[in-house]
Amino acid sequence: MTRPVYPGEGLSALLLGTNLFLLLSSYYLLKVVREALILSQNGAEAKTYATAAQAALLLCVVPAYDMLAKRFLRTRLVMIVTCFFMTHLLIFAGLGQVGVAIDVPFFLWLGVFSVVIVAQFWAFASDVYTEEEGKRLFPILGVGSALGSLVGAALSGHALAALGPHGVMLLAAGLLAAAVMSTWVVNRYMCATCSNQPDIADQPFRDRGGFRLVFSDRYLVLIALFVLLLNVVNTGGEFLLGKLVVAEADRRALLAGDAFGRQAFIGDFYSRYFTVASLLGLLFQIFLVSRIFRWIGIRGALLVTPCIALGGYVLLAGAPLLAVLGATKLLENSSDYSIQNTARHSLFLSVGRDAKYKAKQAIDTVFWRAGDLVQAGLVFAGSLLAFTVRQYALVLLLSVVGWLIVTARLGREYRSRQLHETPEARGTSMAGEAS
Image 1: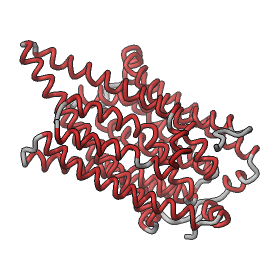
Image 2 (image 1 turned 45 degrees about the horizontal axis):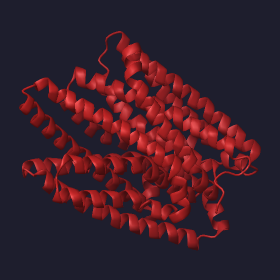
Image 3 (image 1 turned 30 degrees about the horizontal axis):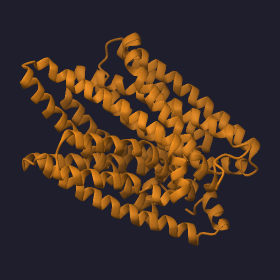
Image 4 (image 1 turned 90 degrees about the vertical axis):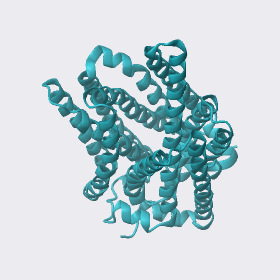
């Protein structure tokens, strides 16, 4: 059995896991600020429109990231982008303190931050580790992600009550500053302990942009489709869950004759739902991910969440009940946060350095948000056709089947790359790509 951590690897994994913990903690702190600002100042409609605008904004972000990657080396690129977001938090806090309306701009900004900063972290991690190291150590790094999500979500309400929205922004900025220092320490440590890291860290990026890299490689195209369909299924399930929760809340309020009980039921349900999903995700990350990677590999791990979704939506189509969908979404989201995320990021261990940073940004930003747009289109069409929950479930079931087909093809492509790419060729690929 492969040993998960070898001597000398523990400190680097701890440092990178801490880095990811800081990034995810800051994001989950800011999520509650986003909701407080956008809903209190503009309402749910503005939130919907702003979500659509995020996808358009990301089309500009990817070329901008490409330009920065051409100009700066690895560590400086990561630190500059993180500092860029950190200084924005200081600006938002200052403007909000003097009464400037920042709700919509902050909502748009956080949508960009959440995908860019996480994609960049995993690109950096896949660059400092070899493919063999990444397969063993990425599950450990994922614990930092799960803990950061859990701690950030748990502290967000208390922090908002104690500090206010602008104080929470400053707290998150402090966490990002710590993440910048962690990145610098990791790079220095890896360069000092790994003979090839100084050469890799000093290699410039090529001129090819993120979108060009994606569309010129079948493997990357399949990853992009995989990510898009993953988000279509996930957001579609959340939409259906919301419909069933509201329907149950209305039923209880009608029976009790208490309109205020409706809001309390919805709030209590989602509080328990998010808490249980986060805890299950953490437990999966700690106890299952490494074992699943060893038992069935990355290729098999990619199929876990789609298979859970397939079984769940088959049951939902037959019995469109809140209990059925609630249990399905708990398992789906928990495996997504842990098994799926770790496997998805591990797919980039075998690609070239430009693809790790540029193509990954394009996939994890634009293609991810494209899934939101596709799902919004399905919801709009379903509203026009007056779909029932069962009919929505059947549409999602078709989406899951498409997701499984793409996942199977991606797994075969991943396996083919492992079989036909020699270690020497892989080393050349990871060192850089031809322009």
